[in-house]
Length: 120
Image (cartoon, rainbow, N blue to C red):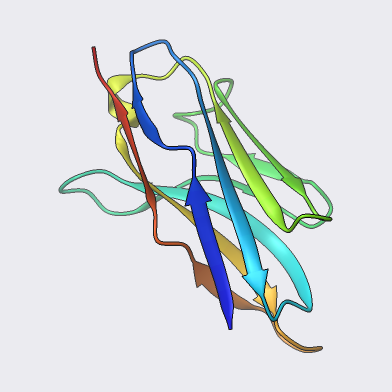
């Protein structure tokens, strides 16, 4: 089995920063792309940022220039540095990883989510 565990969420004032972490553990053979998604109350889950195994990144327009995704392959960890946070960034943030537990196709796994609240 594979587990993804997010951490680092919390309450922050507008303009502040947070750093989210997502640790992948379990029977991992290989990890391909990893990413962060978020879901605000009453809204659909949306992509925030992704990073490939080759460190190519992609960001939602709403977070470009403010958020940075990175990964540490030795630790099976992906990070999301969030700066200049806005109230509209308030959401549950989910980690997703494309992970193979043996040689073969990758499968998508989700973490349980971490709450980020931006409010004064």
